[in-house]
Image (cartoon, rainbow, N blue to C red; front, side, top):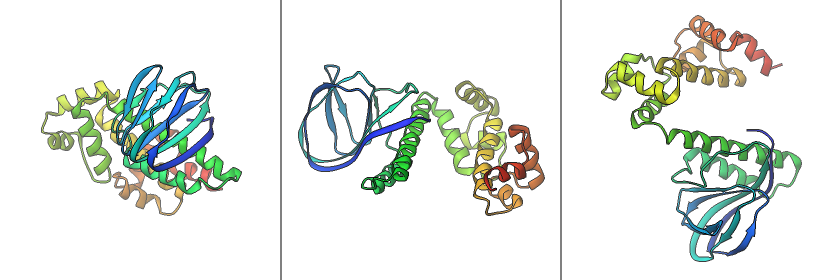
Amino acid sequence: MANIQVHYYRFHKEKSVEAIPPSVIPYYDLTLVLEGALEYRVNNRPVQVAEGSVLLMPPGTKRERIGKTGHTTYVSYNFRTEEPLSLPLVLEDAVLEEIRMIVYACNALEHSYNEYAHAALEDMTSSILNVLRSYATRRQYSPLTEKILAYVHEKYRQPMTLKSIAGAMAYSVAHCDQVFKKDIGVSIVRYLIDYRISKVKEFLIENVISLQEIAERTGFGEGNYLSRQFRQRTGLSPLRFRKQFNR
């Protein structure tokens, strides 16, 4: 997402948590709890934020934090954006490994006050929000769809068919495709190809290895087949796409 303006960021690693008196916040308050737990009153209602969970309070929220003792590690972002964020107040178990990596990268920039560091911090905040939106959406999926997504993301480099995916799930081809399409909106095969194309784009932007090597590393196997699929979905040849990012 774009147009993130971060006004405050801090990585807290503390033996006690300071209380915050009641106030109405004029910005988004994003808090990620890495260790321990936090306790708030949000619009006069008690809210517990357990370890691994995320709290996102929108502008206009009446916020109060309860002070406590005991080791707690959490991260705070205060930011504004013109784009409305349709996320729950609390997302449980949402501090995923990729979010932790982004947070640690933000922490490395905490004491860098130049404009480039601040722009990077805003980009990383945007990335965290994108991961959280994806996570919130996935939590609405059926367990079978979750399992298929995890399988595709892990094994997309390998040759696979709808039949082999369904076999790994121990369900019929028809059932797998029906459940997946209901949740995701596209067939498993279409999703697999689109996911592979997203990985192809990453390699093309890096501009390090040949198209044939990219095809082998992304499960397409053969450069010409990759080129056809890429052109069908983007309207560009891989070479044209690569040149856009490497002039």
